Image (cartoon, rainbow, N blue to C red; front, side, top):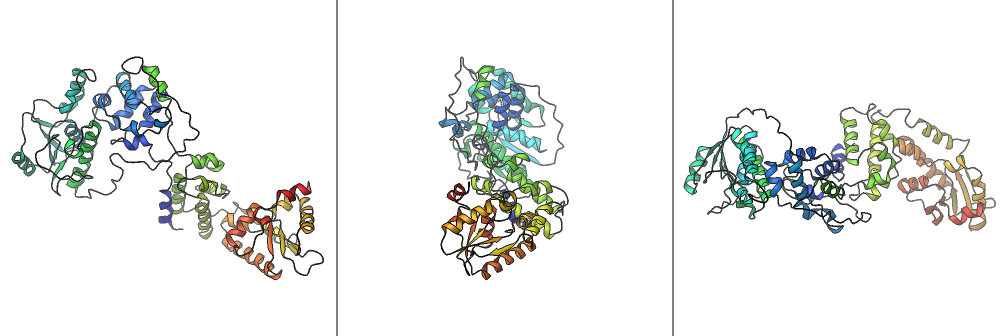
Length: 525
């Protein structure tokens, strides 16, 4: 089994891809979990979700410019979820005491941050957590930069001071009233292992890389408005945070670009069908902001974006509560680590191989083919439990034995143009239908209709037993050729699938494509 090819197919599954709001958020706050917590009246949990991605949470949660709302798929169905209003109410009533942080051992590297605005303090905060000795150069007598512009209706002076106080509790050195010009910047660059500049404006074009924020392959990195060319608060935070990742990689002498495709804001590959989603208007505020109950109702409008097209139609996937991506990972685990012994065998052998999941999948990921190949691999490596398909294989063996198998021409015909092939399940479950169907076909089709009894080989195919399958196909082909290569009329969907898959050169009549026509079935009732 080609495991590299298998894992490539795993990437086709979009079930775990982020919702549009999460992908549009440049710091990728888990908006779905955040909103779900509010809907469950757990505002403390919602606040914790914010703190995981959002530095200086009470500040940023109150002034974020919420690009997530523009991406919300609810836009055309009553209006986007008012995510920012929900953030503001969570900041007010969900605030929980901060956990004590364990001091991070210093790594011996020194990094300077020029500018203590939004992106600068974010970079300094993250660098400190990574063990770097950080020194901030700030031209004014306080940190925060543009944050202070929001003092008033949106933020109180006390909130700003309390949130920024965390910077004083760290090992970060802050040099106030330090104006940095080009000459001073050059001195700083020569004195530190790396430098981040986030001054908002800078006279000289720094030409920072849009992905890594590195300035001309040097130890200087830039972010905030210098790079973003806009005044977005949340994008300033994102650039400072992403620049720190680059600085850390730069100082560790590893690639600055590998595996960074989904940083910042991007368009999610998650696609949803919205035909059955009801339009619901946004909850109106009775004051400047939502109260608790209004927030819960607004959170209830969230669609909880997730692709479930395959599990909606597949009983097998629902039974095992698994997505195709997780399924493929279990198969890979089965192949590489457990080597096919017991692990996931029941699940792998329970699929009916109908292919319906592939028909509805937006990415055309068909688990039928993957599971089929898995079974064949397990058989080849002698890891398939003998009992898994024993009954079906014995049933196939009996159906192809002298007790059931036969080929007969229509009485009075030395050679026939058509061959009725009812398969093995219809004769076994409703044997009384077979003579009636055959009689109807002989009376209504010219040029003669023969009858061939036997099994198409589906049980061997399902079991991954290619040796038995090839033997079965050869036997059918020999009988077909001896009968003069008639056109088959099939009475079983599984038989039609097998003939089309492995014996495509054998002509199937219109009856065969429809298996048994409704007219025929009505006639025998």
